[in-house]
Length: 216
Image (cartoon, rainbow, N blue to C red; front, side):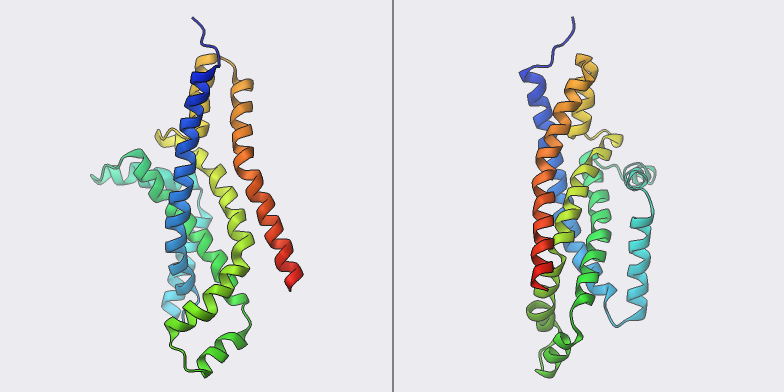
């Protein structure tokens, strides 16, 4: 008996949506925390620290996210570390996001006028106070458009998590499509859900960029 796309199938897609949103939030939060450390290390005075962060960013930006998912999930399994799919996916996405966010925020820090840090130093502010009260508030404001724009890419990128068996929105759509034999209808609904998630963020990113350009 053929299954017809109905309420139960739509609810299954919404469950996949829940995991898409959750994975995006985990990756963005974890990637933001690690990315901030990457940005600070990338702009540090230590040459060794800067070069190590350049390598870190190059590895995660220069290799496919799909490969990174394979390495974390299957690679760790080969050395005896068995992780649930959602944990492995969260780790891979967090590391990937940290490289991109770290690079975005590094650029924002370096975009600040040199006089800002010179004035803070002249006032005798310790380095931690300079970062907390002078540098980071301004840098994060500059980085807002690019950060929100990256969030859109991150949400769409979660569809790759299906490769290790993680059932998010795109994978839920594949399952429902194979049951109902209605791929156009099912993926039309999936696409509409992704659009409803990403379009407002894209508009917000564009608005922030226009606002920042006007302020400059």
